[in-house]
Length: 272
Image (cartoon, helix red, strand yellow):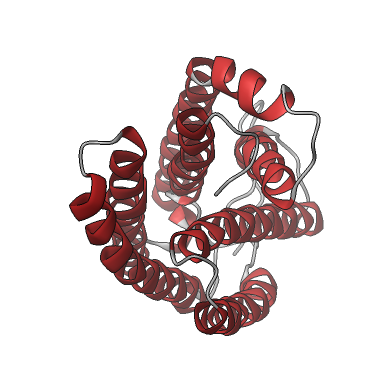
């Protein structure tokens, strides 16, 4: 890419700046979210001496988001990064995203499993479905990382960072389609128990939490995945990670609030 035009370089720099601004804003939003829910976390997570699967998953989701968001800023801001270093950093970002999102989906899946009273049939269905979505997502993540290219290096004073010059966007679109499909099914599975809870005790606090966290949150996640798909199909390769951090922050925020809200309402240190 030695013959790249100055105008193109300026466009790439502007796009990189836009991505950086958005990622910094998302990290600030995540810090704010953690601060306003810190009291609940101290009481219902760290205040509980008992360790459980949900507690471990919660911690993974909560604190890997900081690392994920920070690395996204690093790759945009640090000058003189070699293509090899950029590739390695993006691999780390992709896997952090996959691990964090998978942990969040497991928490939400456990919630669906619980409201279905842990029935054997629903246990088998959810297990098979979760594996059926997770394995292809992991495979796609490998190919997404391999497809990324960083043929343009800019070292203009303090201006630099990794500029994605190529990649198979359709692979990332496929991962978001899988997540969209998964959240859609989870939302549909929440409808019968949520309606039943509303009929039996619609005015109770716990019933309201079941309805709000079980239905409305899934609608939010559905919209986030859909927006990601639409945007990825329209943007240039250097905007590859434009919405990755904000999607992660929204997903992590909703997932952590599910755990905190239910533990607060039930007055226990474990999910139902």
